[in-house]
Length: 167
View 1 (cartoon, one colour):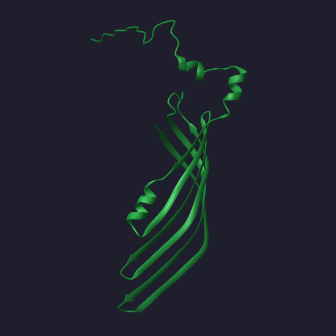
View 2 (cartoon, rainbow, N blue to C red):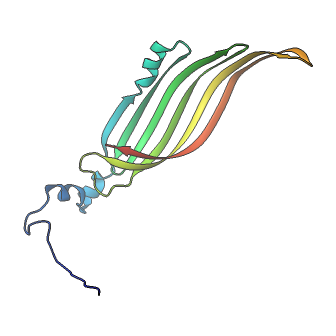
View 3 (spheres, rainbow, N blue to C red):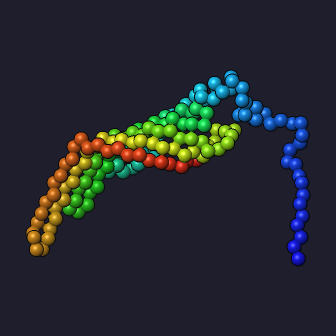
């Protein structure tokens, strides 16, 4: 035997307005103009890279980011530098270079009360770097062999999509 029960309830009192609603749901012409003015600029830096650089002599680098909050969009620029080396018994590899990313992210949340966001973004990245490899190989059949390669002025570019959380 099935029994269905339906109840009606109200979560808020009538006649009391949420003070945030007027700030985010204003449809006047003045509010429409304000929607696309920057509401915040954020500067940030990655603290992991300098800490790792001080603890590990094989890695060094830094990264910083600037983003501008315009209504539900974030214009983002990220840049940095990375240098690392890898040493093993008969292998030595090193690389170093600068990189940057520029893109736009969209806030998927309907309201932005506490400046929190769930974002989806599209970015274009580019890098200029150099790398070197030296390896000594010993083979019982072919004997000793050496690889010594240096690639200078290398460039790379890419597109990326990301899903993020700002709290």
